[in-house]
Every structure is written in structure tokens, then in C-alpha cells.
Image (cartoon, rainbow, N blue to C red; front, side):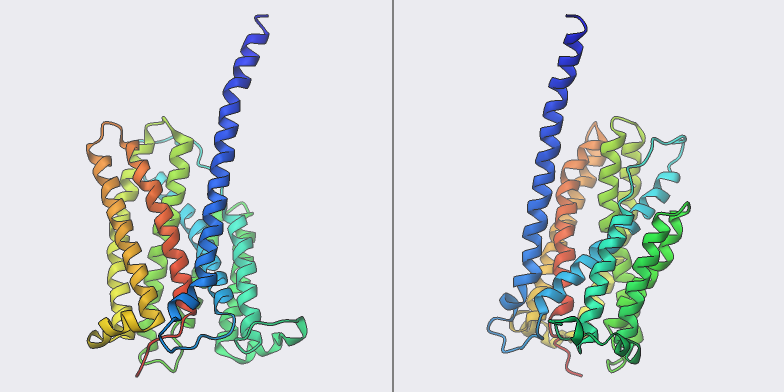
Length: 337
């Protein structure tokens, strides 16, 4: 009987753990499904009453670009937090970091980039059959070459993530960011290089902030109750403040380039781009409030890990920002040069 009781106790303890893990998995799945509805049905809602016309398949393109952005955030966040963990003072040897999701993110990003490349290969129309896709035509246009660069970059990033030196995946991931920055600002735009630099900084900082917070929370869950957890969260919070400042400056500057100050109020309500941008600004404001709450609890609470509660809400809100950003890239631009 004495041998049976410990076994029964272990079984009883593991039962709630399994149920808790299954519950979290279901909750994450529900959130992902709900988030996917925003890019799919968001264009029609944003365009309603504006008189603007969206390109065919805007919802699908917005969803693919959302997935591509999310696939960038995950590995960049892991590399970022891994570097922060190694910089912790007096924290050596560190507890092991959580298992990397970078290979899965690279595979998802590869599929999304391939889908976007197929759209470019059909003249920015949604292909209905393989015969409509002109792969050779991708080499003949700047947009097609950038789409191919993203496909190949995610493929290389996945191979690097599986190698003995996963840190080198930062280079193909950087290539994806550069390609996105150049794609968002075609040569026909006024001062396209300025716009590309703004997008480059904005997208890089946003990916580090979002993916970094996700990996920090995963790390704290694995390390608890290890002491370095609070120090890692505090170090991330300090760097995140700088990232937020860079995101704010580049976001405002980019918006004013596309919507001159005298037209902002009208375009925020009368254009799909302006409406979606307003929704993004409100979400970012909510994220900033949650970040301040987490920082306050990190400083004042007896247990620094109490800041994980608002931080979890923050990472969900950041996920919504990524979704809305994907939708924003697929809507017609209100540029009038």
C-alpha cells in the first residue's frame, strides 16, 4: 500500500496539470481563430462607406502578411531574449531556456511568403489554379524579386534554426525585414528610401518587442521560482521602453508622410487606411498602459514576477497589433502626391 499511495498522489497531481495545459491550448487556439477573422473580414468593414475599392483577395493577403509578421516576431524575440539572459549580472550558470519555436515559425513564414509570392506572380490577383501562376515573371519585377527574397530567406532561416549555430538565422530574418521595408515603399513614391528606413526601424523594433515579451513569459514560466526571472523581466522592460520610443517616433513619422497633418482628421474617419490606423493607435495605447502597469508592479510588488499578469495581457494586445498591422498593409493607401 505504501508503494501505491505515492503513485496515486502523482497521478492526482498530474491530472490538474494536464487539464490546465489543455485549457491553455484551447484558449490559445480560440484566440488565434478569432484573430484570423480580423484580416479576413476587416477590409470590408474598414472600406464600408469610404468609396474606396480594395484589390481582389485583400482579406487573404492581409492574413498571409499577418502570419509573415508573426513568423518574424517569434525567432527574433528568442534571439533577443537569449542575448538579454546572457547579459544578466551574476546569473551564471543560467537555468535552461525554453525550447525554441524558431523552426516552426520559419516553416509558417515560408508558407506565408510563398502564398504572397503566388499572388504577385498572378499580377497581384488571387490565383485559382497553378496554371495562372507565372513564376518566371517574378524575376522581371521589383516586387516579384522581393517576394522571392522573402521565400528564400525563411527557408534559410529554418535551416539555420536547425543547425548548431541558430544565432546566424538573424541574417535571413533581417533580409525579410529589408524586403518588407522596400516592398512597402515602391520607387514611384516620394522619397522612398526615407519611407523604407522608417519601416525598417519600425518593423524591427516591433518584432523584438512582441517576440521578446512572448519568450520572456515562456522563460519565466520555466525558470520559476528561479531568481534570475525577475532580473530578466526587469532588463527586458528597460530595453522595451527604448523600443517603444522608436516605434512611436517612426510610426508617427510614417503616418504623417502618408497623411499630411492638415488631412489627418478627415482621413482617419473617411479612409479605410485611416480607420485601421486609428484602431492600431488605440491598441498600442492599451499596450503602453499594460506595460506601465507591469513596470509598476515590477518595482513595487514584493514578488517581481507579479508583473507577469499584466505582461500576459500585454502580449495578447501586441498580437492584435500585429494582426491589425497585417490588415493595414493590404488596404489602399491614402497617398496623394
